[in-house]
Image (cartoon, rainbow, N blue to C red; front, side):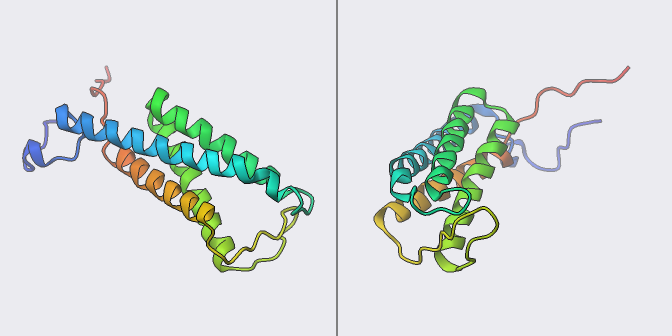
Length: 155
């Protein structure tokens, strides 16, 4: 198939070229920084929430979030594959969605999860929300501008 020349090369969001690579590098750093900050906040607060329990404690859930965010930060920086970027997006988006849900909706204690409703906005919650939002935006950019390798011809 012939390349599409209807859109000028400089207008294509391919992420190729020096400026595209630089922008993707900055996005990777922002995503990793947001995820690392999310890791720090959740790991630091986990002990405070060990007493909020059902079958599973909120402290354990915070530790799981911290571990997933740490893994996602490493993947975004080191592995640099769409699967790693997607994992990082899922961790950041899921964390932010749950933070907002438990801030604005009292859903009680669903199944084995504790009641984590906390309507206030502490400094730690604001920091985690900001970090997750930055990671979401950066990973969306990475996923939308990912470059594809050369097309392989079938024989």
